[in-house]
Image (tube, rainbow, N blue to C red; front, side, top):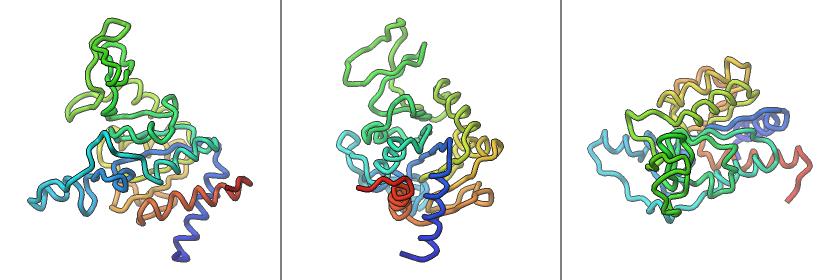
Amino acid sequence: MDGDLEKRIQTLAQWLYESQYPVVFTGAGISTDSGIPDFRGPDGLWTRRDKGLPPAPMTPWDSVDPNINHFAIAELQNMEKMKFLISQNVDNLHLKSGIQSERLAELHGNIALLRCRQCEKTYEKASGKTSCECGGELKSSVVDFGQSLPRKDLALSFEHSGRCDLFLVVGSSLVVTPAAHMPQEALNAGAKLVIINRGETPYDGNAHLRFSEAIGEVLPPAVKQLKKLMGLFE
């Protein structure tokens, strides 16, 4: 491993170890290893569109599985080194990996869930329900362009971002608002900002630690180092 990369991974592990209120923020980049294309990566949906190319083939949604990066975040949760997870993804992979629903805000919805238009309670699509227990109509929870984000998830995201002491961005270009405002909330609270993303982000100049390497080269090794610091050995 590159010496500089190893040093930065050790720093991330140490910061996670010392953190009392770590919050993780994920974007499309975390799911590319599962066969789901991102948006602005070298082979991303919008990158290919701008080149006049059709979308790259992708695995059907219902057969996509979490990858090592999703499981690394689930390990952080299980070690109590992740207070809350904010995600821009709709692929359901965080829940599949073992993330507890009460620790997760899915700002753009979830392809496997329906949401009540009235009270915002969610139900699995497989339940076959068409109406909520409050009487409200159930619709796909996925947020389309121009639609408002779910109020509860958005409020929780701002709340936890404003309380954290470490804010870890994984696989997001941080340009889609209002989700992209979360790092600033964390910075305003005095948190350290760590960004793991192949492409540039508007917050690169504010990051206390920056990784441009592939997520799989950074996050799983950092979790492994963290386990050693915590005295947890596999």
